[in-house]
Length: 248
Image 1 (tube, rainbow, N blue to C red):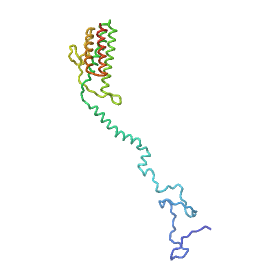
Image 2: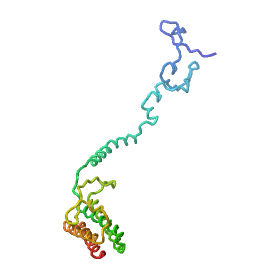
Image 3: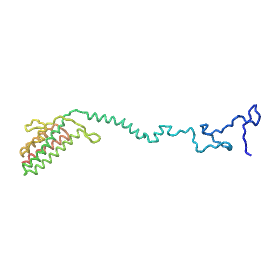
């Protein structure tokens, strides 16, 4: 015979009568919205069992949390945020510095060695062109062209060293004034006047040009010091040998 559990008697009512008109329904997860406590004892056969697949009502899904869903879909990563902050904190000052350098329109006085470079390249070009007029001097003229080209490269290296370079190896924009060189009569003339000769020089004309280059380098060497003075003195001696020995 099954066991029937009755409600306890209420005051003023006979024993064995039901305490309420309606039977109490067991509380479930669906009806209460709360998590059912765990029972350590046995469960009455009349009490329904808690479904094992029921999820707690207080647990929220990812859709109820926009931030969690955004991160789950691969939102902003920490590395991306740091990269953005670094670009803002470091990149903008660097771009400002580069813009300031690009807007530098200062015109500097030309390096004293710049005129000597122009003379050296002009002598090298003239010696190479003179071979067509005097093929018997081909060996001497080729030597002069090679030596004067090396002089020009050495002078340019020293000029660039004084200007300096940036950390990435690029050279800054360095605007200079017009370069002048000694002319045939000793007066300064624009560098363009000797860079592009109208026609090849004769051996005599080339010799006179080398003598002027020798005198100009020697005069400038007396105003310089250290490596520059030694470089100009070496160039002056080489020009004297080319004019007085190779072209005689």
